[in-house]
Image 1 (cartoon, rainbow, N blue to C red):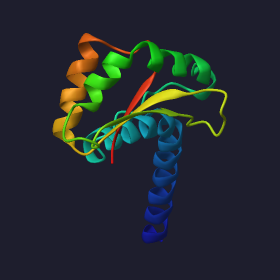
Image 2: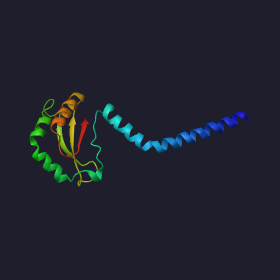
Image 3: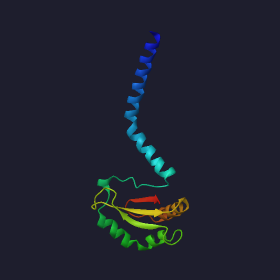
Length: 129
């Protein structure tokens, strides 16, 4: 009888913990995902929601206007290793961001240093490929 009661208490405690986890899961999952992207995958997502991304033509104009900055970023590493692209991450050509791809953490650090002194005025995602 005591064993049955203990099981019910443990089951009830498990349900409470699970329910609390569901309530916290949204923010915790986003934080865990960002940590995974940054530390494990060596990526830095822009974090901008799809409806808040600028129109594609604005991003195209920024890249055209900032050709010197694009050249400075693509010069990081060996030729062809780093690229600056327009990305439409929301399954729509309406909204876009800048995507910078690079081969490793050393290049990411150099790109981040460049962007700290001369940032793009639109969202940027950094992706290790």
